[in-house]
Every structure is written in structure tokens, then in C-alpha cells.
Amino acid sequence: MIRILPALALLTMPPAAHAATPAKAPATKSARKPAALAKATPEPPRDLSAAAARVSAWVNATGDNRGLAYVIVDKPSAAVFLFDGTGARIADGPALVGLALGDEATPGIGAKSLEKIGPAEKTTPAGRYYARFGKAAGRVKVLWVDYATSVALHTIPPATMADRRKRMLSPEIDDNRVTYGCINVPKAFYQTGVVPRFAKKGGYVYVLPDEKPLEDVFPLLRAFHGVPPAATPAR
Image (cartoon, rainbow, N blue to C red):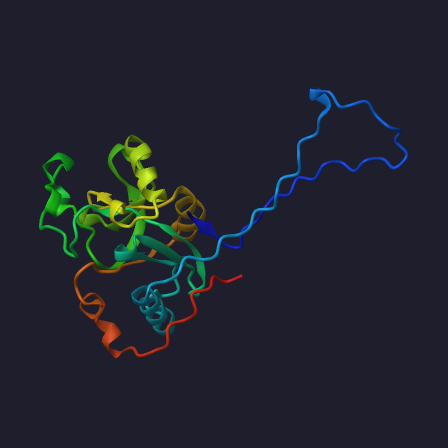
């Protein structure tokens, strides 16, 4: 489930009884007051994997994000993490990624129609990407991670909502591999977290690998030996 921090809970309280009110007849159905709503308990932040924590520490220590917001897509954990330009963690949630394991895009895949993309080609390529908003098919606005290979970050398409929503809410990781390569994220994560922070100047997306060594995907990590920051969102 998506978490946007700090979380706010609304508390509805019934009106206080008047001290001097005499005994009343049993309330009719129309006169009954709704019971108070229990205060929602904020869920703890999703844990960063060792690889995600290492990438985040490197980005924050070196300013690799150039002061822009950034997202870490942790494919092995089927999770996404959003950070603002200062490196403060803003939100996290589950993600749906490419059906096939793999860290490279098939050459020319961006020019193929969906029905011509084979199962083995449905990968979400790993790497560091400068991402900006743009139009996709049907004039739908998406965050383009890699336009050349048609990889974008967006919410679940309406046509696949029922199935993909179940997969996103499932505690399992394997069933989160279902897309053609795009990254599907929860609606709140996208609209409340990503959109306002990437709208003007864009930002960076770091997609962690399935199979390649982390240093092969992010070569500058070889020279970075910093201590990963605590995986606690800013309050």
C-alpha cells in the first residue's frame, strides 16, 4: 500500500450529550448518531533494500540528482521510493514492472506495436534516467523514463485495472512482473508524490537491476564508500 508522509487521519467525534438533558426514549433509526471513527494508524515506511539504500546514499552524498526529485525503482523488491531534491524520502509503494527478467531493452523495441513484443522482450531496463512528462498513445500524460524504448512511469491503465490492482496489492513479488516494460505505481504515489515534484523540471529515475551487478549499472558507485542513510522518511 502506498504511503505519503506525513499521513493525516481525520477523526469524527459525536456531539457531546447535554448534562441537563432528561432521560430520553430509545433513539429511532433516523435519530441515531454515527459511531466515532477510529483514528488511522500510519503505516511504517517500507524498508529499503541494501541496494536501494546504497544508491540513495550515493545520490544524496554526491548530488547526482542535481537538486531534483528522484525515484528509485527496486525491481527485485517490486517497490518504488520517492525522494525530494534534498534527498528526503517522501513516499514509497509497490510497483509493477516488466514481465521478463532482464536489464536491457531489446534494440528497436520502441518502434514496435505492443502485439509484436514477445514475452522475453518485456523487460524494464536498469539504469539512471532523466525523466520528464510527455504524451503517450491516446494523449495520456505519463512520466517518460526512457522515451527511446517506450518505458514510462504511470498509474495502472484502465483496461488492466482489475487484474493489475490485485497484483499490486498482493504481498507476493513475482506477480508484480506483468507489464511490457513500463513501471506502474499506485495512484496516490503518482498524483500526490511524483506529479507535483517532476512537473516543472523533471527529475531522475534510478532503476535497479535484476541480474547485472549494481556497479555495472551505476559505475560511479565503485568509488563511493559512504554509509547508507537510515530508511526513515522526513517528518
